[in-house]
Image (cartoon, rainbow, N blue to C red; front, side):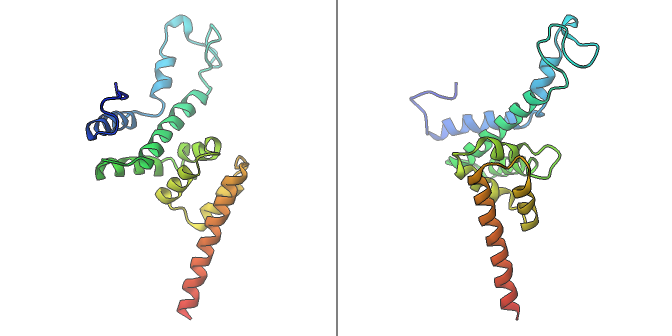
Length: 175
């Protein structure tokens, strides 16, 4: 068990956390869904729409999205509390987030930030520093029709403005 009062915060506790997290990141995002779909024959839908019992739609991606977003949440949490985090584990976590950034086929890290992080601006900061999107990507993120959160849009606008200011400062230096 990872949460025990007698060793929380010790390097051994962090080591257990990292082992569990790295193991989880090593599994395919859809692995939990595959287990649900591998039920008995009586639970299999032959029309491809839903199970015979009506328990789970095989074509529904919400469960896989939930699993993937939860994995991203754990990555952000670990980067936020990075005590005793080895360089290789940090690199693996950051790679996992980058592979699921805005614009990728499975943009789960972006969806987690966009959908679930109203009160976690520190996670948005971590996302932006890990992914380091260029100005064009930031503008697309702002225009994402599902980006309705005012605080997130404000942070993205500020980042895009900072990128513009940096480019302008470089241009001024070149003249």
